[in-house]
Image (cartoon, rainbow, N blue to C red; front, side, top):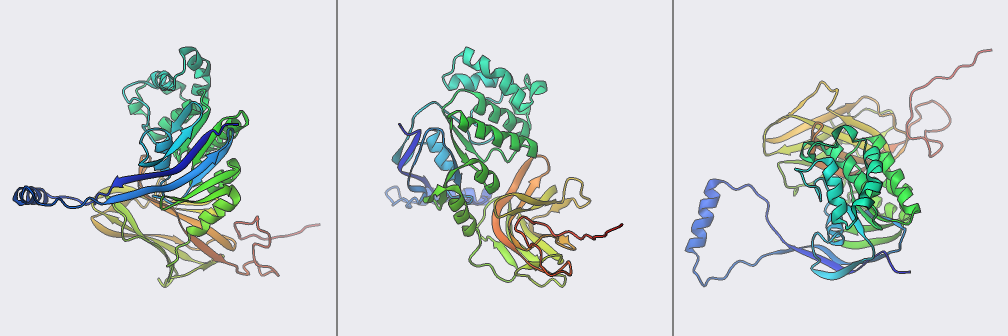
Length: 415
């Protein structure tokens, strides 16, 4: 049987650019410097940044394969190469079958066309006849729940509306291979569950799916095999249980110390998260926390611009990726965050952390509410919760691994 998808020694290089803000004085100085440079003078060497290097793998028809790795590991670049959006610098990729891809908000859709028109537009790009598109049309609209917005230009859609329609189009049109890049994180929880159920259904009907996701719980449930990228290289290829475990282990920072469980001095952008700290009641740093203990999670946010109203969020997941806790300054919060230029400390105080002993993955982000993430760090570290005898019993929760929380409770018996 022919392979559905194969990559052989794929590599991708980009010219490295230094990201920094330029003033008018910088621009004038640069022009004068170029004019003063002798015509035959040597040009400065251009640095090359390698995003992918020697990536090889094979995927059989009908497989659903996870593609996982930290931010910047090369996942999106790999999918763009497979989607023929960008060519590889080295190596080759072969796909056998009609391919649909859903890479990021806006890819493939024409902003001036309506949702209805874009369904036919994407179908035509994939080489489908009008009859084939019409057969899938009602299913696409029903799955996306977009009947009331179908005749509006997609440029007026929210990101959630857009992704509902985009996923539904990709999933229902008749392609043999489907490439999905972290798009299911946009919709609400109910729609995400429908999407993952749909991915499982597609596999049963022989479709081949390559899925990029940071949601290890979903990857474990949907993907039998997974690929792990780290620094542009393929470092894991095999059963999802083993590869996901390898990825989660790599997310624990080697330099974790004194309550600092995330620190990044090199991130670029208008808004960046520099550090996340774990603090006790006195403000002293903690390396771990016990069940039911007080904790303050401090997020160091650096901004180059003034933002009047943003949301800061902290999410905790189990090691398998199942969500446990979602904490945010908005919506429904009386603490709107205003960022000034410079560094701000945003503290989340938890009087008693009702987590049972174990390891939990931490995610932090800064967002414009109901719009977009300005800075987002996924699976930045493990939060270690130590056991404590909070129930005054012979065991420390959890006595069984299925216990995630340890809530206050009281037993009684009546005749």
